[in-house]
Length: 86
Image (cartoon, rainbow, N blue to C red; front, side, top):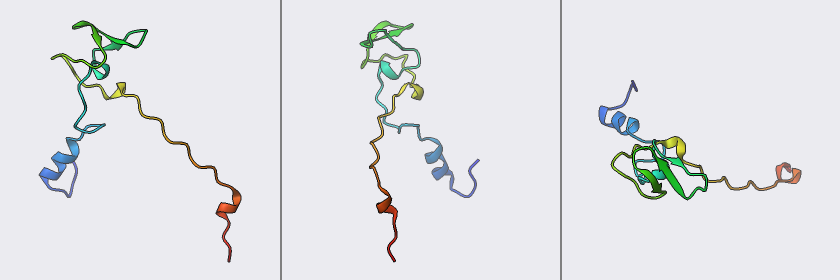
């Protein structure tokens, strides 16, 4: 239980999903779907072979199937950048 905040505020915090509440339903992120070996389709035990970006009524979101975007490369710094001139 989160102490010190109102009930409405607590419900708003606890109701948030990992990638936001506006996740598009696609077979690619479904709990049941498995990607095919060529990566162009999803193998579903409920509906059979499905395209990546379609979904059915059996869709259950699985946040672990999302692939995070690549982080940008950090700038290269030299020792001169960290010197303090007095």
